[in-house]
Length: 186
Ligand code: HEC
Image 1: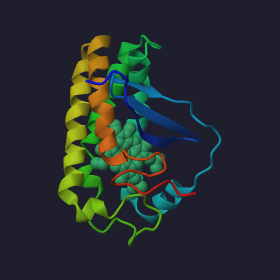
Image 2: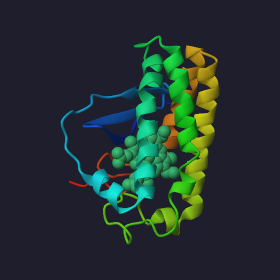
Image 3: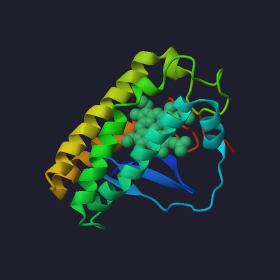
């Protein structure tokens, strides 16, 4: 076991007008949400919404998951004592994770819509994509169960595995979108 925690960026996510950087410290099993940068205009999702509802639905799924992190991370970092909010968020995150596979049907990549950040590997390497989605669904369900007990230590213990499951698709160098996602449009 190495002493120093390994900090891995799970990804930079847009929430409303802000970007949130979620990092997971594997050594400690603790995740932290770094400063959100407000005021960044990014029109991509509006274009997607007009083009095809499935794009909007899957982005909404991801945003639900990103937003659900906050109350959970608040408990993990000791900044919040709102265990009810953490439980509600963890349940929302777990339910959203179960929707991922069905929201990436064939024919919804960049050929159909140049704005999507979904990489072609989602379809060309489907087994790996579904494995990443299924792992997330399993880890998110464990978090929902842990959070339902309203026990902060149980939530803390499941934070690392959950964050790393996001990294199955979003992990990699900060500038990359991740294994299954294109980088953010500039
Ligand atoms: C199975 C692969 C996969 C996993 C696991 C995954 N994501 Fe995603 N995520 C994607 C893909 C692909 C996109 C790009 C979607 C698109 O443009 O259609 C995305 C986009 C996003 C976005 C950007 C949405 C927007 O506003 O455009 C957020 C936020 C996000 N993911 C959060 C998360 C969080 C939090 C987790 C873990 C709880 C997670 N994701 C796990 C594949 C995944």
